[in-house]
Image (cartoon, rainbow, N blue to C red):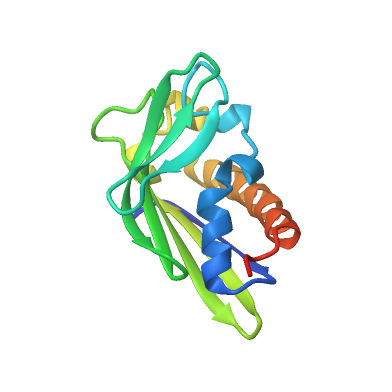
Length: 161
């Protein structure tokens, strides 16, 4: 069984628009967290590079690029999935994020599932020595903050005509 976090938010937008804001505007709604940073350099700017088979990358102020993960699913308005690694992860330490966009009346339920934390040992620096349950709660709380910021971005970003 995989250690995972799952959080959802409903946004006042069609699934296609919700997907576009999630992917196109990630640099505008993403809120870095020092507890869960990708590299020791600190926070850079996140972006999705390309579409299917592209990458999620973090670009540092000095121009260097860190590949967070490869995109494994790019289904606009339906689903997005990508790998999630930190610079301190070994090749065996892989986590994966799946984002689903589901129409609920005039809104869209956006669900993020971040799984694979069982591949990262409790003593690993990325887990800050937190026991599994506490780590997953803290990570889930961060995803809730991120989805709150994303929801605000959706609310302020009118869909194209």
